[in-house]
Image 1: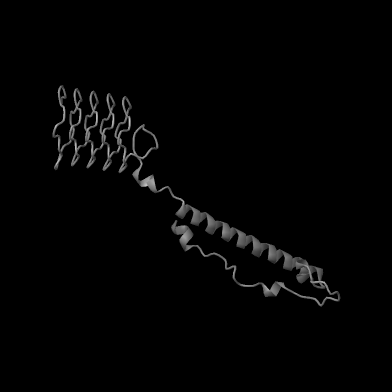
Image 2: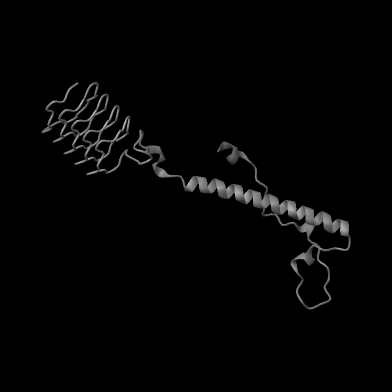
Length: 189
């Protein structure tokens, strides 16, 4: 991008007076655009048309470059910075309201659910190795029979969550994480 910002673009605001040569017209009709460039010397006409073509080409190239740069700045997907990882695909899972979403049986290794709202979400039997639920709201979610090894639950709201038979080996729980009312029957570390 620095290359584009430091590049000097030819100015298109200067008129090309040195290329224009008007000739008196004996007819009453207005001159055609080409007649403005015609002179008496064919060699000068050829040189003037080459200069005009080069100037127009530079102007079009400059305009295309500016348009391309502008488009790339204004039409960037704002969610790119928050793409979810793992095989869930290109779907954004970070900072989203995914309440009631069904992720059951999915493989979501290292998926990023940071700051997401996952109330009543169904993760039954999902593989969530290394997934991040940092500061997420999992109230009432079903995480039964899930593989949550090395998952991060720091600052998460894990209230009334079904964690029965979940593998929580190496799971990280720091801060004010709440497991109030959660079912942890058969869950192991």
